[in-house]
Image (cartoon, rainbow, N blue to C red):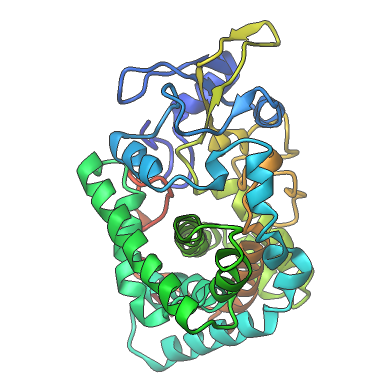
Length: 393
């Protein structure tokens, strides 16, 4: 569906469906007709139903596109499995992403953000905020955390675009996945020869060498963390900047506040408002489910439209289509819900808090260098954003 209201708003057709027919059929690229779930409470309820499966190998799983299907078939990880397998694998890396562990990175993330802003201020104007800040911040952090050389960023950025492209063919997606897995597999071998003090090095020592995980399992897991660890946050930084510049009163309040509480609240509100994973959480019914009078049969696909769910007026006070930085938006479903909720959400929150709490105070006259209608949006990708964001001050 096309965004026909505003580049930062879900399509008007989704609004209509949410109001008139919140659990209804939708037709996908392959002719399949999964259920489209659009209301906040229904999304949360069904995402926690044990009869709803995340198994992408299920023949009726509602893949986003032919290319995305090929990607998920080649690179399936624990997030595309059900309990107990999902929990057993996830627990092997949970400790690295706890709120307490991630919070220790705040000084490091702050130094990265300040250094990149210093470089922006010392350079020419206008500058592409995506290339200068939005992409380097999460890329530097996830590379350091995982133990992936940042100098290789051009490769995994390029491959990430193909892997998230809804228009990529099956052959293109499979080839990109093969290249990404080969690259990370080589890193696994190098760290097996010379272990390092990072997450990948620890997985090699604690899992590969003990038989807890195979080389293939570690490679696929790190691929997931690397792609997810930079792509969504980078797009949130860029789109969040657009949203704040579009709401100068809200931005002024953020610029005038040094308490971290407003940066935290801003992060939650922008996660709710933007919901960059705009192609929906995908699942399949493992059993018949009678949900509030609707019979969802075993094998039926389900698409959870979190973008419109996060704009549900039944779930959030005030105008859900407005940016209100003091709104209590912590219940949003931008990271999903239930046992499959995003593993790296604490890291993403930290990075966004630091950027939102720093960039606009240090560059108070920040402005778009071109009208937002001239920006090229990532409508065809599974993560929404902009390819470039020219800004000046």
